[in-house]
Image (cartoon, rainbow, N blue to C red; front, side):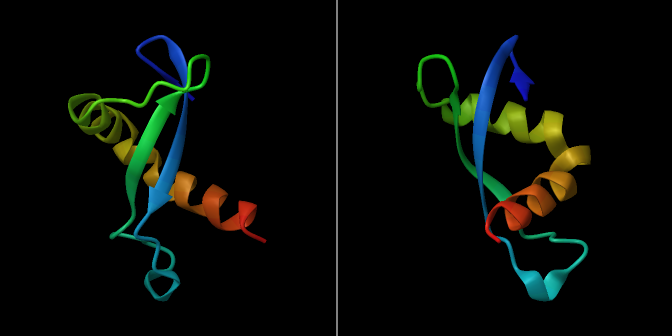
Length: 68
């Protein structure tokens, strides 16, 4: 996904399968720029979460599928 014009990778935490399908406790625990591996700052993480709020459920589902 793109953030600030750059590709970013994210790690999702707080996934509780008992909360399916809402996953309201899930959050982005860390993120980094794919091209450099540089981690996003706390401020950037907050901005990213705000930008992705509508897509968080989709990210959680993708994370769960990747664990299979």
